[in-house]
Length: 147
Image 1 (cartoon, rainbow, N blue to C red):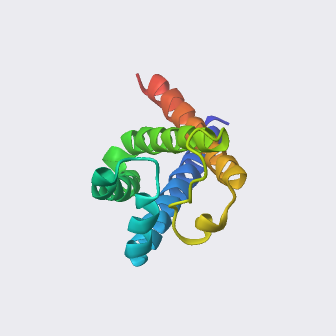
Image 2 (image 1 turned 180 degrees about the vertical axis):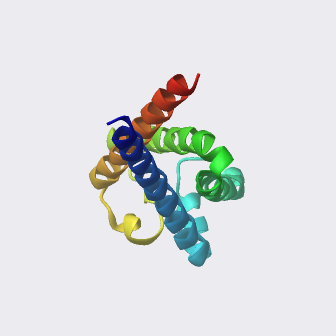
Image 3 (image 1 turned 60 degrees about the vertical axis):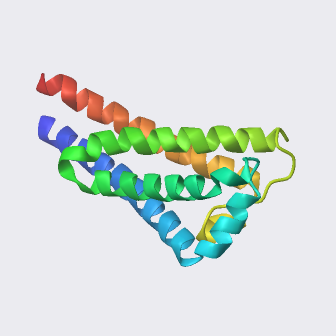
C-alpha cells in the first residue's frame, strides 16, 4: 500500500516538473525565435525603456534557468519553488493589467500563448500556480517523511 502512494506521488511530481519545464522551454524558445518582436513588445510595457534589455534577458534567463533546474535532479525542488514564484509574479502583473492599472498593454508572451486574452492568461497562470503548489506540497510531505 505504501509503495503505491510513493509511486503516485512520484508520478504527480514528474507531471508537475514536466509541465513547468515544457511551458518555460516553449515560452523562452518562442521569444528567442521572435526576438525582435519580443523586444518591441517589452518596449510597450509600462516600464522605462532603459530597462527593456534588462527585462528581456531577465525574463528569458529566468524561464530557461527554471526549466534547467527542474531537469536537474538535485535542483528540482528549488526549481519548482522558483517556477511557482515566477508564475505568481507574472500573475500579479496580469491582475494589475486586468484592473487597468497600466492602461492597454500588449502581451509579450511567445507562441500560442501570445494569442490569449488577459483573462485566458490569468486562468493559464493560475493553473500553473496550482500545479506548483501541489508539487511543493508533495515535496514537503516527502521531506518530512525522510527526516
